[in-house]
Image (tube, rainbow, N blue to C red; front, side, top):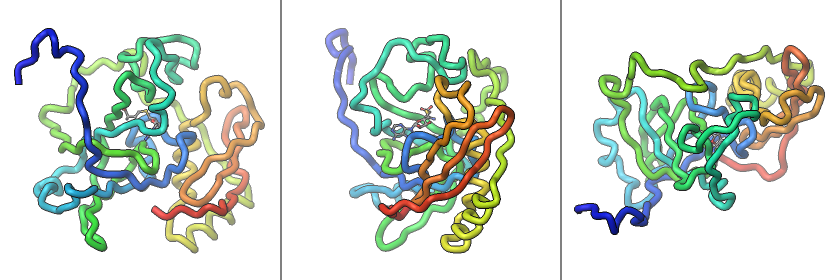
Length: 248
Ligand code: SAH
């Protein structure tokens, strides 16, 4: 296909090749990039007609994959030319294409994610993911292997985000410790480490970062986690079951 001046604004139609099942049931709490919360579990279910193992032949030998996906939960909000990255305290604006913001002209996300098992279950094909930053229900539009020889850039410069963010200690109340133990016993999910990793990243939006003692709620699987920011640490208060139980 040759591209001429007239085709500069061509529209393309994309098809979901898969859908994400994830521990993250809402945007709040999801880390700002993959790999930061290694305990996060998710899997991609391939959708027909791509729900066949042969399309993944050879992928199992790679440790990581690039997942291209749609920011489906914010499409309706549109996009802005300038964004306030949380990294800059929400005070400075950057051009949308200088950021990894979710609100973009084309709502496409890109994450490099640790690959887990590839398997078939009840005629469905699944790819396990470790440390994903993806919301439950995210449409996946492409999967590619991560190629270290080409994708690792030794002398890369990180612009306004040169290093990963500083984390803060997370303390659990007695109630929260016992709620985590009961949840793990009932489900086999290591929710304590997951909560610790998520909250230590400080998922609060920049405008709330100066506020302490406000109670936050964050939904993981079928549980609402209540926590608070203190001046030098975060405190997990308790886990509250949600009535609308959703399976992954
Ligand atoms: N690694 C990706 C995503 C970075 S933005 C990229 O660089 O393109 C990360 C944020 O995306 C998370 O904090 C989460 O709130 C948001 N997110 C994840 N899945 C989403 C979805 N399906 N719709 C809207 N926002 C989503």
